[in-house]
Length: 266
Image (tube, rainbow, N blue to C red; front, side, top):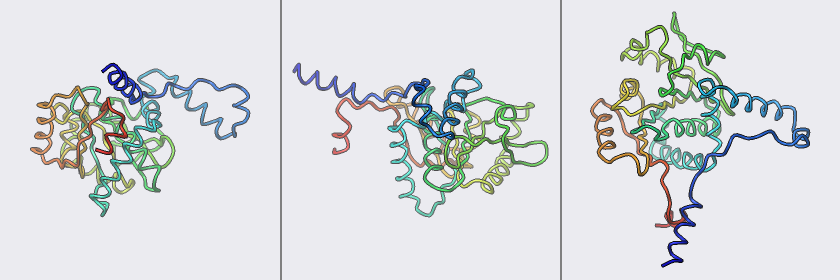
């Protein structure tokens, strides 16, 4: 009995998935061996991570996408979606959470990063969980008409761009009207191949509810061991009641008390 308990505890420890710490400065000798381009990219990453929390949300979110385990899960998700929808009709996906801290934003970042790295297509990531004035943070490029211009910024490798929703000038509620969202999506599809949206629970977020019936599909994110069954069922019913198309469910941060390789064989 003691050996079985020790084996389970060891498997539990080995299966824990930790996000890597912020990298420290490498030794001088290693810096000299890098190319000039690599040096510049390294300094930019460190500068971004040293900013205040509110200022570095974009950089920190993109940094999470380097987690190889998380990217492997997103690769499986992408494969499943392409298998079920080979005609490439799914261009916009809403990653909707069900509870605080469920990882919907991180999952959306990883999935968008994977799409941009494995094709030449343009991918736009929109995070409805971050209440930041996009005109102050994302000022590299923009699109739109009249007084409303949506600012976007290229992030990470590949063709990944980021747009953060901002409650600027008190006009955010007007933007969530059905016809405004239709116009917004039309502009998106003219410039980008994919739109990936991260949002809170549809039950608790007016932003998520507004986009729910407008996107091509929804991925519901459930936090393993934390999200109650009743909450998940309510979120699913709310999505379907307002016309959302549920593509699938992700059980995030699942713990494997038996080695994952055994789970895959079951």
